[in-house]
Length: 169
Image 1 (cartoon, rainbow, N blue to C red):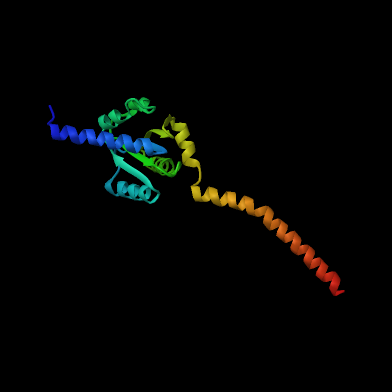
Image 2: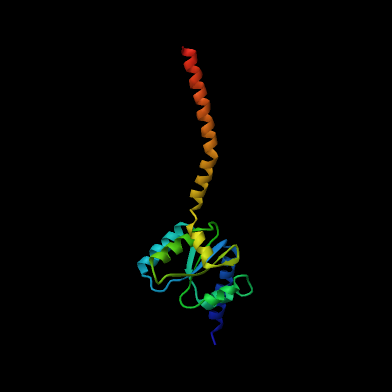
């Protein structure tokens, strides 16, 4: 039987994890077995730079944290080594980075994921991973808005130039 101090620490970890899971807009659960310390450090750095919280967690603690939630079906993949990547701001960052990493490392596998508190399948995670970053999407939208205005400005300038040539004759 664990002592009361250890039990209290584990209960606090579960409560903290419940809070993180409830505030995250997206999350990805991976099996990190077989990666080197250098690769793990580089992965953690990239995730941190993109605002993704990444940590290793015991399966039993994660299982307790998802009890009674829409993520409870995720318990079926909680075997072996488990790490969780959570994002509060970017829907695609965790999936994009971890799927790219999984493609390059055969032992590293994506197990499950969620989006807005609902469990999603691996195909949806892969589709999220293929989406461009938020900044690229915003730039694309802005260029689409700017194109008609730029065309109009060129047309007005052409009229001004043509009228200037007619006046010079």
